[in-house]
Length: 156
Image 1 (cartoon, one colour):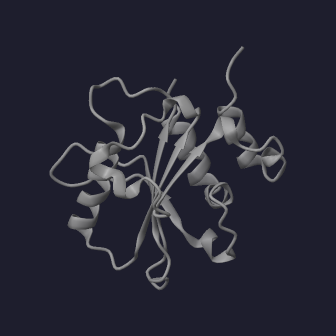
Image 2 (cartoon, rainbow, N blue to C red):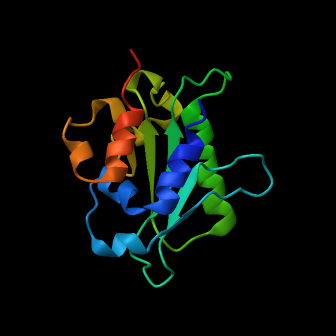
């Protein structure tokens, strides 16, 4: 199942769905531009990045990764994700601070943050969301959140 493109379409069409999901309600958040960005000199590709308008230097850049399966490539999901973020920061040197949001369809797909990245374990810079653990009424808040909640429901 290719869920990356579903997340991309949802966030591209209704970026406010992402901010609703992470609990940010500032109306200026709707001015963010969403896209996917390749990082130079490697084959890394971020699932998504929310960039604030240039005039909003006090607003963070959001790096977004959506995971709907267990990472079986032998590489650690978090090592790759943090590597992509740090390479982006090195290459583009943005003035904005940053946050990372990982959206798992199910908690069981989260391999856990490895010891090498333990500083991110309880760090507010990194937010992990499990769609199958969202409150049952979250889908009533907006159509976008309802669709995301459906992605977290297991098939029976």
